[in-house]
Image (cartoon, rainbow, N blue to C red; front, side, top):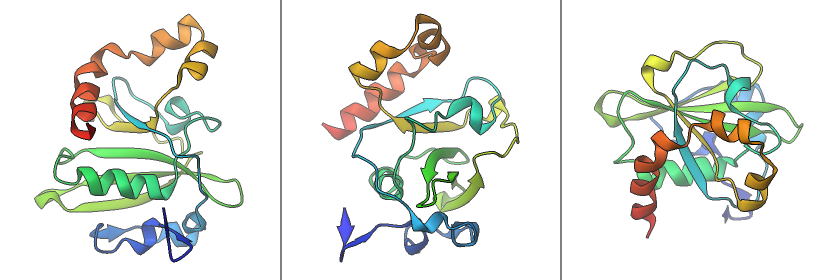
Length: 167
């Protein structure tokens, strides 16, 4: 949604986030771009990954507004000491990852990471990756091998809980 004809940007959400990484401004991530409104799904990390291993730049981008709205709606139910990752794109076509961390006392910090970063996130922490929900058209283009690698079964209970919240 637009506020006074402006997009909602993470850098303006000082009441929601206790800490906002200055790299949102330094790297022009705060330019933000609108994406089509999509339902989001949360995937639980099962194996070590770098961003390029879990995000598809053609299908997984979300808007900063979607990040803000999801965090606001679920602020009290986000798991403590867990990071939630969202793929963003700026107006120059560069990709970044917004990392929302639920820290001690339930406060929220948000960091900007470059998509190309090769840092490997340890599966022991079971981070959350938030992506647009696949529609039937997208699902039909996936191969059986791709579907198997998504490992959707372990997420069913968590997704059912999230769906129940939105009904």
